[in-house]
Image (cartoon, rainbow, N blue to C red; front, top):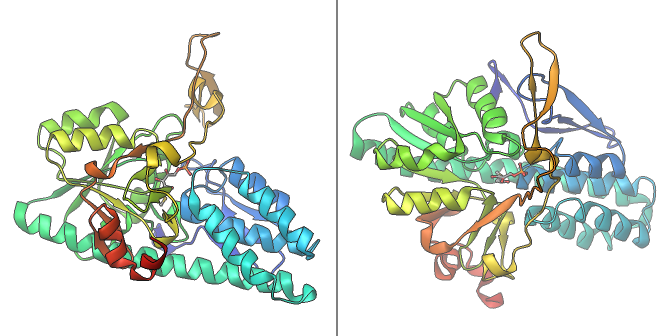
Amino acid sequence: MNIDGKPYRTILPAADGASVEVIDQTRLPFAFELKRLATLDEAAVAIRTMIVRGAPLIGVTAAYGLALGLRRDASDAGIDHAVETLAATRPTAINLRWALDRVAAKLREVALPERAAFAFAEAGRIAEEDVESCHAIGRHGAAILADLHKAKGRRLNVLTHCNAGWLATVDWGTALAPIYVAHEAGIPVHVYVDETRPRNQGAALTAFELNAHGVPHTVIADNAGGHLMQHGEIDVCIVGSDRTTASGDVCNKIGTYLKALAASDNRVPFYAALPFSTIDWTLDDGVAQIPIEERDAREVSHLTGRLADGGFATIEVVSPGSPVANPAFDVTPARLVTGIITERGVASADAEGLLSLYPERRSEA
Ligand code: MRU
């Protein structure tokens, strides 16, 4: 999508296959900086420290990271080491494991000297497929927004949580793709952006990308969504997902579940938008089975921001000595999800709905 009229992607491979360039998302929204990743360890650090984040983007970065690792050691042991290193970086988003498994499975058939180049090309194919999937999610989701707009006959107010925009993917995004497609089709869409404590991906990243692309929006405190829904100010919620079970339970950024509860109480439709690579067909009970990443307590106890003089500062906001917990994701049970918007269309949030879009999975169900 665009920054000041110029199209960007979140990850760009170097032509010689020796590195990739990513947007450093820890510096947004105040500084736009690119970072070059040239080794397995640099890719792993970028994922762990959230220089790159968002389920589809960490999958693509991991695939490139595997390729970079193979430039040093292309043996079977080298593949195993790279996969283990990258898989350990973040446990919840299944796209990471999916991308690594896809590349690693094909690699065993490739001769050693060609493995690094093959993996780099395969990572590129995953990236291109992600762009196509997200654009298709945008078209299917925009049809929902167009219908809602017709029914309401006024500006459409959409609430989203965290950042599931183009910065979380290679381009377009998942939850924000329908908004971009609708915006480009002339449908008046206004986005309410949850700030998304503790890391503030909404306030920092979603607001940045909507601003840069010219989509009207308002940032709200995480606690404001229920109030706005009670007062009829939200027409629809759209969120992304880091892992969705075969039964339609949606795991996403911490706080998503509370928004789904408020949406259900106020009869506001609640959609999750995600590509096939986010569906974990091996699970059917998200609350019991999805591993939830516990992140550093400092993300809750401290805040980093820009000072009036343009400098940056990190400040403490929690009473010193108080214990802090930081679960990074939660699971919204399928019963609270109106529909799942995928690249193949919109499914009901249940096993039959998902299988009707992915009939090739029926044999595994
Ligand atoms: O911890 P993050 O910033 O990687 O979490 C991102 C999210 O929870 C997104 O909503 C999710 O990955 C959907 S991505 C399009």
